[in-house]
Image 1 (cartoon, rainbow, N blue to C red):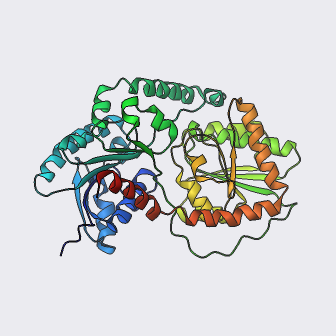
Image 2 (cartoon, rainbow, N blue to C red; image 1 turned 180 degrees about the vertical axis):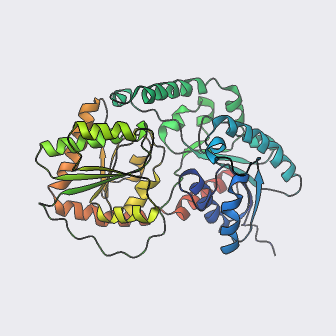
Image 3 (cartoon, rainbow, N blue to C red; image 1 turned 135 degrees about the vertical axis):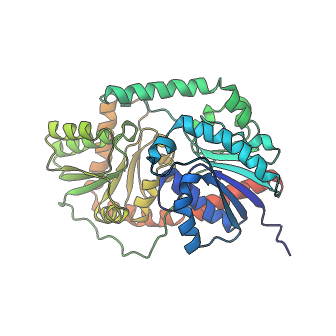
Length: 413
């Protein structure tokens, strides 16, 4: 007998991969957890066939079928397509006709558009006459202009153009019409909710998209010796929005206060040479290392060796690395901007206020937060223990179940 508690969900994910993090990892983890609750038909880009088929052959997911939409030329750099906004818009249009044919062959209780999770691009699947949900969506946060000072011209220009595009988004009749078909619009941050036109905000709810990786039993970290150098870690792309230059400046301020400190930067990107020059100019070459992109196994070893994870992002909607760090007993220090502040509680880290502050003042505030931890090893140990406990409550299963409880309530399931 069919279990009618299990609904038939069409999950639309431009990006879905068991091998990658970020958006592709979000698609894969939601697919896995959603399959525990409902029967799922996944529609994703053809590129991910090579990722998904081996994984599903090794670990079949009950009630899951997968379709691939979108042309893919083998041997072409994936960045040519998968990072292109124009290509993504084309894929969305193509997806509408693909799914329209699909819904003619089988019934669905819900269509859920998951990735890309950005508020600025339309999903047309709501026009198919089936209950429709979007998100969690991000992209509505703006980096404070004061904190962009000192960034290369290209980074500042990009952020200014992006801010303008968010203002113009309110006038985008196509996206507004497409979003108006959604019964629920999940948003990752308050700023993204407020970015929506007023007539759509009544159906918007705050919901988080990311969860912790599997957490094994761990031996508690030893209490740091008070005279030992404070070991900081950052992980992420080296782009302006990540605020890495603020972390480097904070290290310089800590050293002027007589605190021994080191910072490992795991990641790569267009700002690598700019950041290397900042490190040299501040005479920090013995204290700050840029390690480049690392295999996940090496990154996890860095999590275990560090004392604090520092993540001064200016507008990340989520921040997978934050939950990774917490799951490795690593307290997090971040800014009160965009998504990271939602994942860090006072029990497991520090959220540094930026309200009304200049860039220099934010660098001072970040240095003060880190200085307080360096001078209080017992507090740092408490935060470390609480980090692991907090991470255990932030699972992928919790994220998906919570979202679908709200969907069930809204749709009267």
